[in-house]
Image (cartoon, rainbow, N blue to C red; front, top):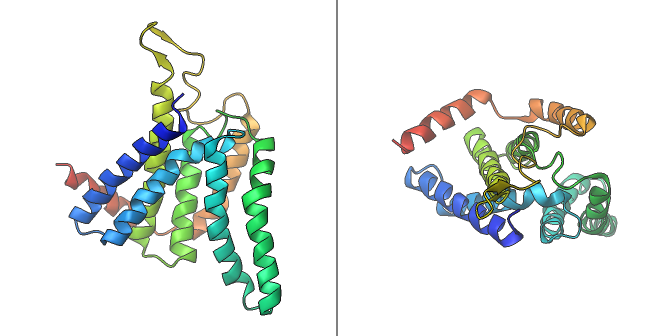
Length: 223
């Protein structure tokens, strides 16, 4: 299994390639290109959200606490006074940063459902929906944000599979096949729960034809 630094480095490199291609095609500004790199890097550590006491899980929930705080302010501001809002947002920040990770690690298994293509789809669509609905980004840019997370996620899974091959001993390690898979065959309930989690995102997504156009234009960049 690749370590934290390898996952982060390779995912960031993939994000830089994606960002440069989009910038060269004049799809986005330099600031948006930097965001693409950051999203790909974040996607590159996301699968290890199920790894107890890892660098990834601490970093992930440290990062997630910031948008959770911002969303808390946006949602609660019309209903609370300044003092109440401050206390409520402090509670949101502490909950996400410290308690969410502990709860998450208790109910997940490393190399389980979060190391799967199904999880990559969930993270991709969630990022796209947040970008489109909550951040009011254009449809094509929201899909691009989701694609950046997906790229980093797939890089992580692919690296884990590559590191599961022992070239010196010419054998496959026991971990082979536990990362780049559709779902968790050992825990069917996890697959069902993740599919259920996908359903509420559907109405929040940008038009799918925009994604098709984006993929078509993207394929032309590599010709």
